[in-house]
Image 1 (cartoon, rainbow, N blue to C red):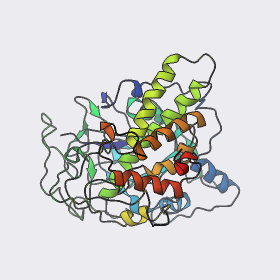
Image 2 (cartoon, rainbow, N blue to C red):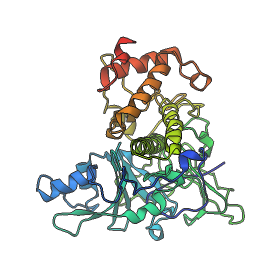
Image 3 (tube, helix red, strand yellow):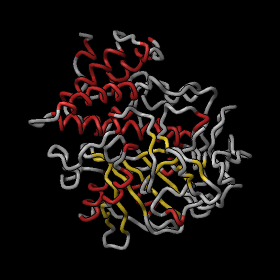
Length: 420
């Protein structure tokens, strides 16, 4: 089994991504079609920073400093809180099982907070450039954000598919929160078997007789894989694990964790596909870029349709309000169906197409390539593609997703509606 942790500002060695060699090759951030360091940004933090300067938004301090006010301004629900106790941040000295790091997220921004630290770490998704990393400066007037490209030491790696992004990696963690770096660190996502998930994380929620390796640490440095799994399963409270005073919640919701891991790879795939599409349009482009784009486009379609998702063997139930508030964000068709509706009995979502199709990042993929993505989606959803890799999608699944898209997704090609 493997354990795992999400990285937002940490050093990692020995990647084993579990992906194809091509899709983890590094793409040049200084390419004329990309210019990650210099191109004007349009992410949620850039917009908020501008609103703060213009006095359109005001942040307030409270018992948790600026955290609650910042989350509200970014439209990040506190019930998205997940807790990671592995030392996988540049604030590693403060992080341990008794003082886990809290992460909060929505579709395009993540905020990290460590109890006892004044620093708030923020990652925001620019539709074209990918993830951009910041620290929050509450001492300035008005509060501001400082870009931290040093984070790319970890956040531009094979683990992020060679573009600026977030990542989830596998490790075993000792009682101090230190990951065991012996051997490769493995990327994980919604394809990962349940029993290999969440080492280095706290997990609250029930999951029948399925087992994970969260809520557990190792005590034998010679055998870090031997975790103490006593009292680690189906927890609805973490009171026995640590004192949650100073946190917005004492929970680390299992459904939020599952959503975050799906979203992480999905986002990185969209960023990579968009970058390759823009690079492919430049004169004199290396032919290998176009070849790799073909491969990555198919990887994106396969992933967003959950074609190779790990099957759940029992019901998963979260303990925060995340399951309800996430689904409530819609959009919904006239039958009340949404791509955000959870299943959590046999698979994560009731309708197997990623809600990230509504994101600005998906819409920002150049039209020529986005049209190819739409055609592949339509081939599968209409039933004309019955290849083995999509065999998990039933006729009812395909029909429902197609109907939902027709009513809720703007910019669809006309053939989605006419069938031509």
